[in-house]
Length: 130
Image 1 (tube, rainbow, N blue to C red):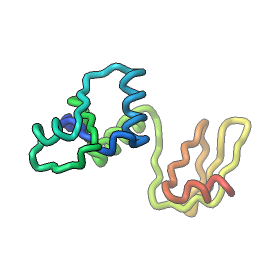
Image 2 (cartoon, rainbow, N blue to C red):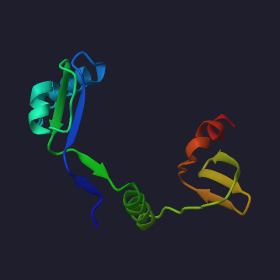
Image 3 (spheres, rainbow, N blue to C red):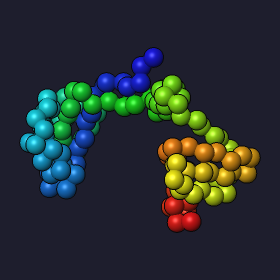
C-alpha cells in the first residue's frame, strides 16, 4: 500500500519572502532537481494562477504528500513487530525511572519496560511537566 503520493510541490511567494530564501538555501546546500520560476513563467505553466509580478516560485518534481493514516498504521505495525506495546485510551497516573527501566501506572494497569515513549499529543507539555 502506498504511503506517499509523489505529485510535485509548487510554492509561490513574494521574491523577498523568508520562506523562499530558506528554500533557496536548502537547494544550494542539498542540490536536488527543482525549477525556479518568475511570475510570467508561473503564468505560462499554470494559467489559472494570476500572481503579482514580484512573485517567484519553486517547483520540486519529487514533492508530494503522505497518507498520514497509512503511515501511522505502518509505523505501529513495525513497532509491534519489534516488541512495542501500545496502550490506547488509558490515562497515565504516573511513571517512574527504575534501575531496570521504567514503571508506568495507568488507570487500568501497571507496566514495566526497558524504555518508554510518551506520545500524548497535545497533552505532551503537561505530561512531561509532571
